[in-house]
Image 1 (tube, rainbow, N blue to C red):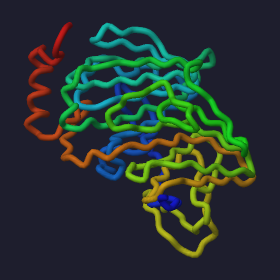
Image 2: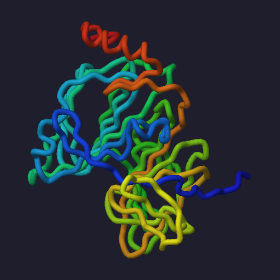
Image 3: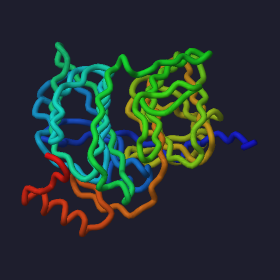
Amino acid sequence: MEKTIQRPIKKVWKSEPTIEGAGVHLRRAFGFPELPLLDPFLLLDDFRSENPADYKNGFPWHPHRGMETITYVLDGDVEHGDSMGNKGHITAGDIQWMTAGSGVIHQEMPKGNHKGQMLGFQLWANLPAKSKMMDPRYREVKHKEIPIITTPEGAKIRIICGEINGVKGPVQDIVTNPEYLDVEIPAGKSFTHTVNSAHTVFAYVIDGEAFFDQARIPFAHDAAGVNYFDMKPPCSCIDGTLVLFGEGSNIVVNTDKSAVRFLLISGQPIKEPIAWYGPIVMNTHEELRVAFNEFQQGNFIKGEK
């Protein structure tokens, strides 16, 4: 029987403001500078605002190849369309899982709610070399399709991808075998979750605060996001914090006086070279050159059109 080993915190940092698309103001939890620390994941953006001017210009038509984009909306609407003929919108609690594969051209236009508020996240996941030119596919999952379970301690878990106690999320058959959970823990409670010991595992705090190490080992992080260990009182991880876990087979999260909500995401590392420019992620610079040449020449989309 495999010994249960709690995953320690490997690194902690705060998301940073940036501008993407046609002028969308967002916070980036990780991206190119963190490669390959979170393999197979490439990027996580937190787009939340109460000012439509921050997001109304959106992400007009652009290509993707060699990776997947996962958009999870907690409040507001996002209209979308792509070269596969998909068109519609996702709203509070919905998720869009797009596997770009050999190539997709799409757009995403955040619209906010009736008050102008917008809250959502976009995760980019890499594809291994053998799958980079797979046929594109698109999955739109409505919030009613996402199962919610409650633990004996009172934690509420939305299972987008993965399986807990026999309950499976609606997104399945993904190349890197990821798990994508939305977890809420009441104040003064604990949450323990078994993870694949071979996977990269991280949490991103959406709201509240919690301790992501059962031993509450003292740590702090400086303004640059570099964590270090010292003798200061233990620091809980707050809204906008990215927690990367070290090796082990489970994670333990404890709350104190505040409840917490966070994304818990894991996936199988690919461990291959990455050639990444803009919305295209390949293994070599030559593959990147080919992809952008095809886009310019109008033959980027493969297969049936």
